[in-house]
Length: 283
Image (cartoon, rainbow, N blue to C red; front, side, top):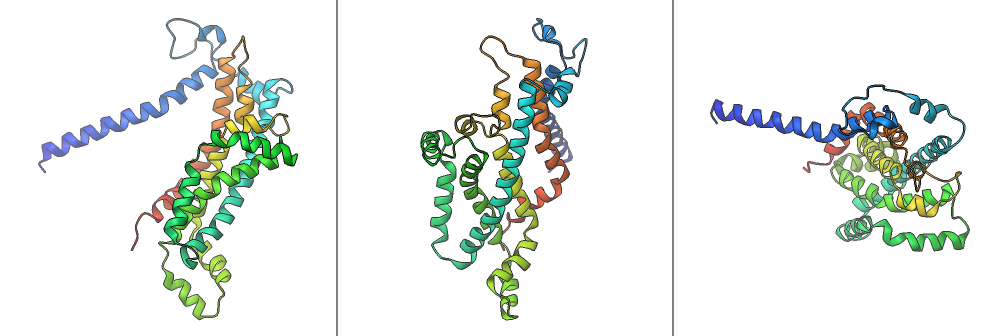
């Protein structure tokens, strides 16, 4: 390839990267600008890219105001954090056991099991929501964090098994065979050899599960009613009234709600990349 063609492709790559960054970051930037703007400025035509009188009063209200919708948002934020964290930990634990069994013990045909897992994962929650409501009402566990977490676990466990099964398939079986020859039992091999070697894959699975639970809205809206069990997306929707919508306050809670997943992704990006790429090549 000539130098001219290389420069042309390099120039096109740079343009595509810049367009991708603008496409990704512009909504976040506009949401932040909305959150620090006064409501009178949001109705001006044409709209301005920067507010003439930026204010962080909404952020103060979200974090420190002791009554109203902002207080409900903080409770919902804590409920989302508890449910997402617990479901992620249990999903990784149970998913690793199931994935290891499917990958190594060959109890059933692996292809059939993987197909069933993908089939379950592809079912839209809107199809299940009525049945889940009736079941929760019959068992008298409706409107509880326990029931919502149980539903999230059931919906996200197939994805965790599917990701971890693909990673376990790439681990050299000779390492486990050597440990078995030395007298280790299969559970010992799993917890002392396979699990420590699978750190990035386990962490990536946990992150995906956490983000899926963190932003889920439909099931939380239908299955919860009291503030003790409502999650963050539901409390955000309550900022929108029938006759009045506080756009800058909704933008503020949107920015605040996006901070935990972004911080986790930035802090552990190396492990996430390792987890995503570790099962990509099979030898």
